[in-house]
Image (cartoon, rainbow, N blue to C red; front, side, top):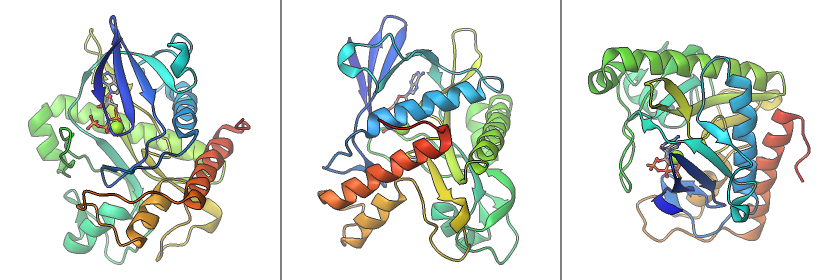
Length: 278
Ligand code: ATP
Ligand code: MG
């Protein structure tokens, strides 16, 4: 198999008409890959994505061909998928305000051009979920937020509108399922592609602790950082060391942070799926 792309987290191989997406144990924060891996992370995220794809299949077709028909050396952390013509947008949806959305709101009163009511805080629930797309940057570049009009100008209004509507629908379904299990999906990022018949198809990973913010619903309280089951923990730790994303040399993650991060990924998996991780 030919390695055609090495992303921050996944290695992508071509196998005939399919791709084999192999999730590594790498972790990236602010688009920088840290030098320490989180054992089991690739398998956890792969299993969680597969679980979600099934639960979303009546809303949107997905790229999964098989989780079994993959090379033995990658078993458990690889998926055979349809190779798609990827839509050049990171389809971000937010139900709650935090992170870069909060920063944008504090500066402009809006997120990606969508005006929001005054007085929202870190962790506030939005009146309704909003689509806040970004560009899909090339390797080494950062994704830039854009207004829906900018996305529509790049992709065409029809495709952009379909991506937005499906993204909101996936978020609504996903957040309802998660909330019933005690997890708030504050925001998430989806990727779509077009198959050979031009059908808009959900790709990449979906509603994982890498692509989403998962908060503990019982502990949710706007006005502070929310307890989370995602890589926010690693982001916060990295920043606490004094490291900044433009420093080329990222710090090694100490053992107890690796463990605590792994525990959070496992907890999210177990809470959502109701399955034991072994
Ligand atoms: P980037 O997306 O900028 O290349 P990344 O670090 O996010 O970098 P990874 O998520 O590690 O990349 O790798 C997965 C790559 O595979 C992404 O580029 C994603 O867009 C692409 N991809 C996912 N599913 C498909 C698919 N079905 N067909 C084609 N490409 C896909
Ligand atoms: Mg990615």
